[in-house]
Length: 87
Image (cartoon, rainbow, N blue to C red; front, side, top):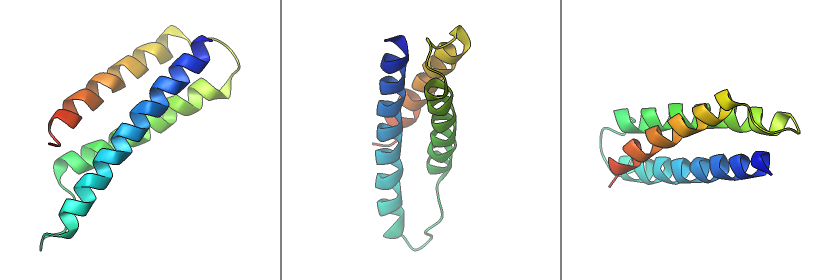
């Protein structure tokens, strides 16, 4: 059950991160510069990290380790800070 709960939490973070990236991409497409902003690059890096943690959680049919839970919590904090900047 812990595995399912954490996997669901990370999947939700991935969805929120992806949605923010797409919003920034749509905004960027309407500008002449059309280069990714620092926040967009940070969100893409976060997406990579979230994908890695999700893979670790789903790889083994067992309760997640304390290190994986800690990593997911830290990623949640990063996501919260980045999403606050994407208004």
